Length: 153
Image 1 (cartoon, helix red, strand yellow):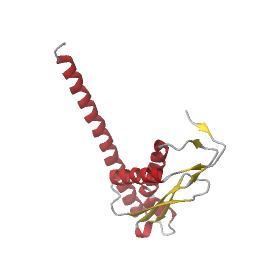
Image 2 (cartoon, one colour; image 1 turned 90 degrees about the horizontal axis):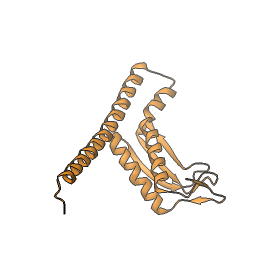
Image 3 (cartoon, rainbow, N blue to C red; image 1 turned 135 degrees about the vertical axis):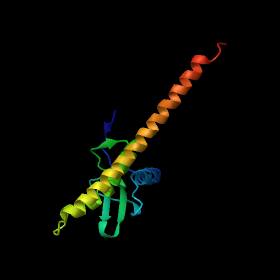
Image 4 (cartoon, helix red, strand yellow; image 1 turned 120 degrees about the horizontal axis):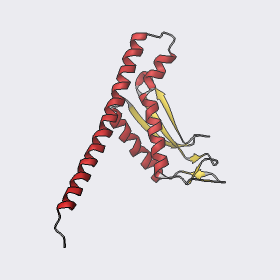
């Protein structure tokens, strides 16, 4: 269960390394290879993390806030850092959609192309998750089979 803190929550260099590893994992899973990614461990007042996008040049800066809002989750856990990493990478994933949707020269065919590319990336990511789960299930079945056929001692 999470508890509420009365003080400022500071993220550490270890949290920052966890954030970068988790971001890179999701960048790889979503196939965001055309993006140049920079990481920062800086203040982001009122936020856990932040993404700054330059969609035109496919550059993203993913920032883990040095201090988390004191009225939020306490203490900082690797799980919370990893959840924030996924959230920020999803901003990168949807960056082209955001740019196209905010463009004054809205082009429906461009939007359809971006949407389709995004759907395929999500689909491939989910395929990887399903394959990993299936692999786990097969391994579990194999272990149960071994245990069922193991000689009694």
